Length: 66
Length: 251
Image 1: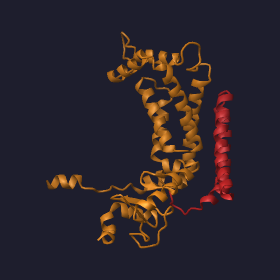
Image 2 (image 1 turned 120 degrees about the vertical axis):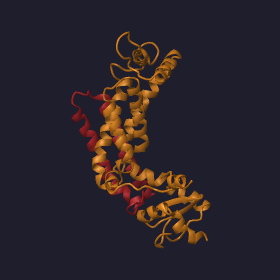
Image 3 (image 1 turned 45 degrees about the vertical axis):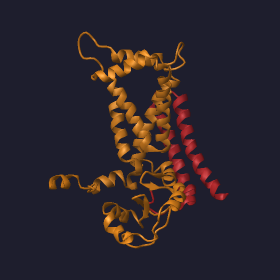
Image 4 (image 1 turned 180 degrees about the vertical axis):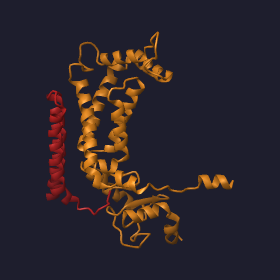
């Protein structure tokens, strides 16, 4: 159960990135593309952090495992 | 005959170290994220314009895809003076065929939703190589139709992302998706049960005889059987000279 919860947190973090990107792109004008790009980049950084701190524990892989 | 045998013998030509450092090493993953996000953002923006924007391709009054038909009409037109937008007759015939059959009605949806899907996949880092391939394919078709715009730059970035697909998705969903689902040459944890039943899995690395573990150790498939190596270096050696390392086991 705990494992599934950790996994869902990771999935939710990246789903949040997709949602952020879609909402920003579809709802805000493109006058300043850098300002539009920054929230997406911030969401990616957050999702990456969740992945490193939370989701990675589910897999706990060795290096070169891809 | 000796010349033919020497030319066509199986010999793996390894990539130089600098190539592997750029395209296959995770230390450059942050750079690849920027390239991937830029590409994904551009595709998402292009798709949103076709679905939502003032110059959208669908729901504009009348059948869907009328702006796409206009684009095709301009592309296939042959001017009296100067060069036509399309250089290849077969591609002009292809667009004319689609236009005459009113395929623009549904093809506009395919392009618009495809651009959004490619954009989202690149932004979240899911199946980055596949998404970049389809993005490059769309760039290719726009270029073939005579529309330069941002397509040359996006095409080059997409090709780079395709080359660096392993590290481009490292800071993204691919980091977990690829090990779980696997790659064409290495089954993932989801497929390991299938291979466990099907293949004779070795317990020690064929190269250095270190212990191996299903689902964690890099795998190679020879003659329908899966062999595990203890590390990527040993896997490279095994892949380049399978007969040398597997011959004693199979003898």
